[in-house]
Amino acid sequence: MSMLKVLENSKNVTDLFLSVDVAHCDNASGLCRGLPLVDPVRVILDMQELSMDSQKLLDTLGKCIPTWKKLAQFEISDVNEPRDRKHSDGEKIISPALNHTPNLRSLVVWDPHINLRRVPHYVKIAAANPALKTIQIRPSISSRHSKSSGRTALYAEMKADARPGLNALLDLTYEIFIEVPDSLAILPSTFVYPAQLAANPVQEDIIWSRVLLFALESQASSTEWSHSRQHYVYLSRLAPLLVCKKFAQLGIPHLYKNVVPKNERAARSFMSRVAQQPTLGYRVRSLFLNYSRDITLKFKTPVAYTPGLISLDGGEDFCDLSKSVGSTLRSFRGIQIDNPDVSMSPEIEDFHWFSTTALKIDHTLTCLTPVTAFNMLVHLRVTQRLPSLRTTVFSYVASRGAQFFKKHGAKLSE
Image (cartoon, rainbow, N blue to C red; front, side, top):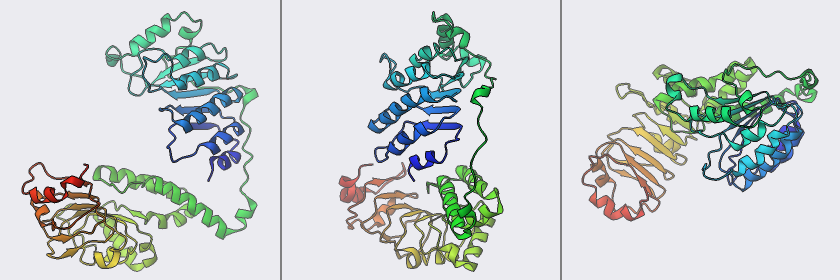
């Protein structure tokens, strides 16, 4: 959905977070057309290196800021550009906009890496805005670190600056509350739940189901699971489903797209559920079962009931793997076997291997990671062409890999 459509229907938005990090494949035109339609109270701007699209976005923002009557607080991350340049392109656009914002009360500069040693140009220009009351540099740092960082020099420059108001505006308490004048008070929301949607439960469920799918996928966008990250992902993916019964009913099936059981008990519960409800198994695309090797987790059942599996991480017994999901599997990790004859999926691209067992790998393989002794590479049928192979990762104690590198070394880039 275009950001123009979002902003057209969100005119009462009070907090607006914007990043100028626009990828080459993205398009910011909808966002640029939508920004003049809103009037936020607080804007948070994440500055990045400017591309052609981000330059257009920043130009639009520079034109909108002075027109936003409700804007009381502006927060900005420090521009990560060389300080030997007089002023960055981003600063040149933002500075005059902040100076002419009619009701700006607070300017917050975020310096997370404590790199600021000089007062940014846009801070000096914004300080001339008669409406501005406070300037903060965040995050705060402890007194024992203040001398070792550039923050002391930064504060000293601000206090010594000849511009009237810059010293007086510097706020070191970090305990302010931005009050919006009564004349700029936010009107009660005029949003009304669409009657047509409430009258059509089927369409209503379809729309909310899509919203929940987007929310859950944002927490599971990567199949690179790890034990350190697993608990966080587990909790954050459950959060949207705890809002109400409808969200739980519509969202639980989406959890089966990227399955991350919390522990062995949860893994066994998952296996039992997909065996009883095969329709849930059809939703599974990635499966994480990477537990201790002392735990015997047979995943013959989940593999048999997950025909659309694309990414698999962990487990031991995969006798039926190539028969049930061989046509779709793209990523294969954490598997240890002793089967003397293994034929992998014809679509496999990313392969982590724990065994010295000989195997057959097709031409699609691009990344190979042998986790045990590098001797297993000798068993990789070095006569195979593997035309797509570009990356391999191996142990520092690797040996006897000469045959492999003679055959495939010229193709490797990493």
